Length: 232
Image (cartoon, rainbow, N blue to C red; front, side, top):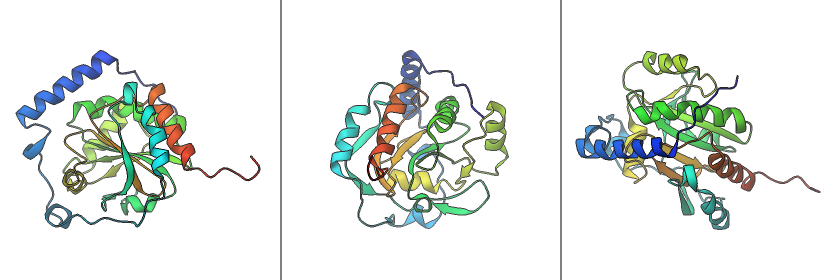
């Protein structure tokens, strides 16, 4: 099922950015205003999973110019880096980590129903999945609403998004772990993760994921890590 996505205009994105700035001073989204879980990830040294990254610096250098326009806030790394152990529950209720999805490029997006920019960009994330999702790439939103699953389920049903699944971490340890690594300052947070499970880039704040700029960046990330068949 495909979903239409109203494009976020430059003015709208600017307005959202101003709103996020106001939220910083108010302590609404950023800093100590968030309530974190009490799991080990929130209290101890963050564990790093995986070994050496296969994504080459040359690949990242080629991606950097594509982090432009509507996805200019995506900070592509100089070198790919292993990610902390990010644990969450998938749509079927099974406990998962990002390492379970190695072999795919992932666009991991942390969101909550109380985060207005998160809600605004969800249809665009759905459209990106519809356009480019497959064996080599997936959009993976991870919801961090506390409490039961009813509220995020109702929101996704209300906007007609049914192709992203519902991955959740109601303890918010995923956010706290990423904050410890300097990757998360507020919501939404989006990570571009290579097929090797290593971090290629990170963004704080919303973007127009259904637009041409996002498509160009994601297509390049997929192509850079997809083996080329012999003789082609």
